Length: 409
Image (cartoon, rainbow, N blue to C red; front, side, top):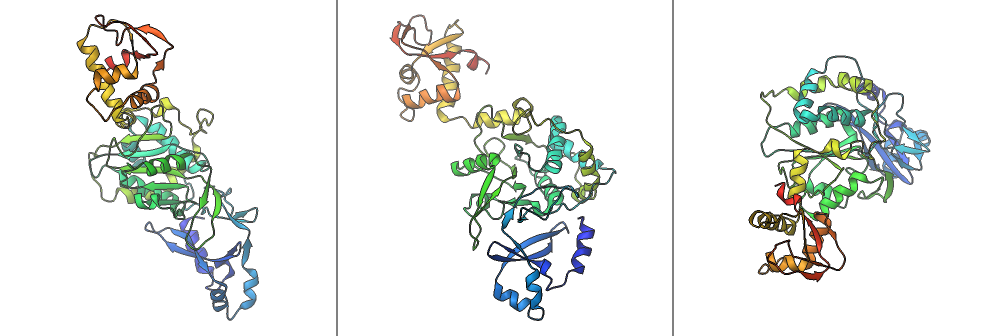
């Protein structure tokens, strides 16, 4: 139902209409329709007591029997007019009907904005939006927009997404996403987090878990816990370009775009884009279906790789990794080591590089060699530590250190 039809529909509903209420399990809710900041009519559920219902229907108590009773809440995301259902399996759909109907037309403002946001990855950006609209159940990588500068389009992008998807999207801050109460976003299809600096381990892990979760235990105040299928897609806007959270190598959960300031400024640009939403979603509906077999999150590692992702991955490396990197770069630069690989144990490395550094021990060195550099350990053998010719050979279980990893720098 589009916005105009929704407003007309609301005018027909009486104040004490049974349509305004629902019983879900043993709890009554009043369904309240309100206008959001983009003048779209959206649905809110407010817990209602039976005593309050008796007051509301004091003159028409026979209508109480017409209030629909559901076994629970369900999530059945569908943005198409013919595919959307109010309920299924006697579960009340928490997903709202889509606000707009597609209509062929001009969407130049939207195209220009998406080209600014996605740059050389514009086609990936279109595919991302196509999936949000046409395939809302599909898992997508966490989209992250970063820039130290202001007025680069980060918040405008979030607002545009909110305008398109209405009550199926939500805007959160760090405190809200970190709270144990998740009722504000558990049933949302799109979760926007503005100006995030998610540099706390618990938030890092929460973002990672949400990005691939298939179900979520809903924890709302004054409502018993219940489980829902989770289809949430995360979009983060941050002014921390390289350190908004920790990202491991070969990570496929993040689609990162570093934004620059646009050449021109238009205070009414968002309004102009909102006016083109019907034409934009029409274009998305006409695009070729994506290949969902390439990756569990639609995009491959190769497609998502860019300089912004590389910078975040490097910043996410541990202190020990960074110290080892600098130490080996200096070692290879200042010694005549012709071999492509050298050998050393964590003890050798500790004694050569960190003999007076009490923050780094052999266990940390071993962990960095294995988990962050990806080096392999050899069996018991004779070796020359670091491949330096004037050093005596020794027996041990050394790690194989690849010279190319450090000389690329």
